[in-house]
Length: 119
Image (cartoon, rainbow, N blue to C red; front, top):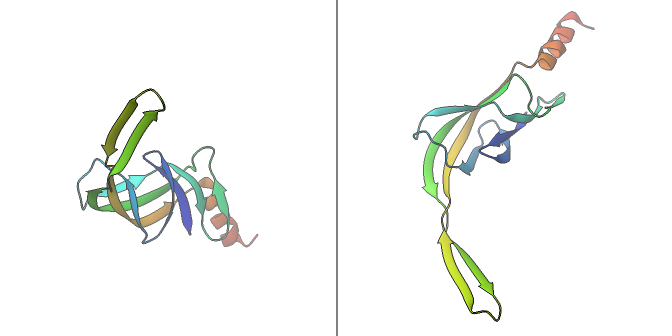
């Protein structure tokens, strides 16, 4: 079972128990967050594709830590003009752990209802 989730503008594939590095989240370490922007959900039997989001699917995660990435050098130059600019940048990130992927989509409920009736 996996899902593709939009977290702060980045589309990431998440699975249960996976630890991911995502853009900095505005909450403290150790708190739980939930994401509803699920673009695709695979329950092992059927793939649910959203238009643009899959309704009723939620991904719950815990924020483990915050940090800053490696320094990236941004160098701009225009040849023969004497223009040179050097800047640096460090991106903030958060490390999250996926705790639960819960689905209560109408499609999922219909599939479960069909399995119970034996159709």
